[in-house]
Image (cartoon, rainbow, N blue to C red; front, side, top):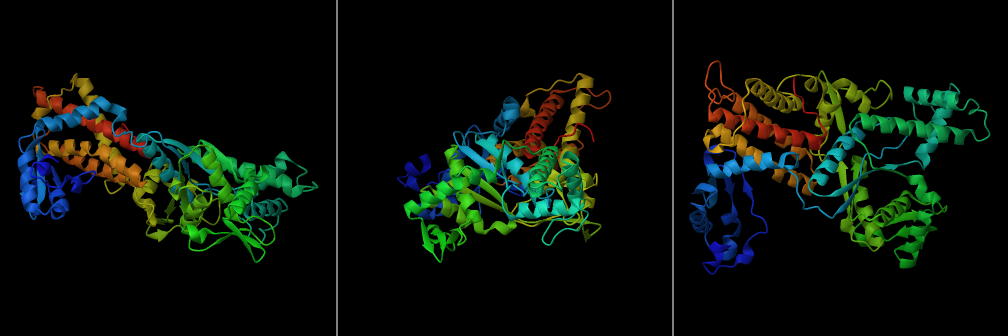
Length: 535
């Protein structure tokens, strides 16, 4: 700002945040910015001239060792040793809080994810949401959000009727009915219903008995499987409660009075196209029964009544239409559509020995979360699910995840942590204490590691803002690469060798790797993945 104002130029052209990135080629400096290119034309100054003025202003400041102008107006910056030391001091002082922030402070966020129908085990799509949703909740919390993890328990509707009919058929020793559910889990649950209620088949309200016991058994299995996967919820909201409490009817009547609904062809329609949806939606069908969106409207109203100012829905690939309809529902209720965010996740495929894996041991049809965990373990499964953007179809190579090699991303990251843990133990055995004389860390590999550690808060902030926890995983893989290269540089010994005298450089490097250990711990914690002390 001083550079512009001192020359009588318009400071309003400055962006609210200046983008500073680490260049791919370290020869170009520690950091780079295109600010001069971004605003030069707006203020009527050639970008390279502006870059030169900025370089002159930055050169000689305490944190900057040198600034170069490159190309049409890029600025390449190198940090002073004191600035790099400040990064390490910040990491070590913050400890477990390093990477946290307050930009979401005061925001009450309802994060609804998984919400699989209680008609069978969690499939791979649900497992992806279990891992990503839990990680997103951790990231939003880290940046100050007050997050409630919620599971919408779909215990009303035709799918439950088909599930109950399938249980009754299995209890009778019959095959699954048309459009019903099959698999060993159906037989197991049917047998447990009979065990708890021996007269279930002969009871006058047989279907109700199987519904009451069977749905509860299935849902308890789902909750236990999610807990074993490291994913727990604060609220399990029952869809049926919206109908039993009259919430759906009240919401519909309110929309009728406000004019948001209109009557046509015997049905009540939401004017959702007026609120950005691609078409109007039937809310009350011609037979008088509520359509599914009626429950969605009442559910959103309930969330808002509980004080949530942001409602995030994490839905499967077949739910694209829900983006428009849920925002339209918010607008129809007189709300800001921005209180609703819908994240759509793509499908997950398993591959083993180069071929798709399609059969489940228990479900009989689709691969389940438990199948994946049995094959590779919880940590590898969670990491594999989180490390890619949910916008893309995810192919998981089971053979790769079983390998203890650097080709396996979760092994690559955890091995970097384990190497640090080993150094820490050996340093303790030697009585070597860390020292913060960071001005002694002048090697390029040391600088790379320090600057990478400094990127962590920015990565977590971006992951929260963009709802993309995979950014944390990809950052950890970058940090692991920098850490491995640091260790593999022969002249950068952290511990003295043999009778070698312990020097202040050894102590400073020990403090550096302890800072890296802290960032690995924090990052893996955000993903819900265990950091291993030994591998």
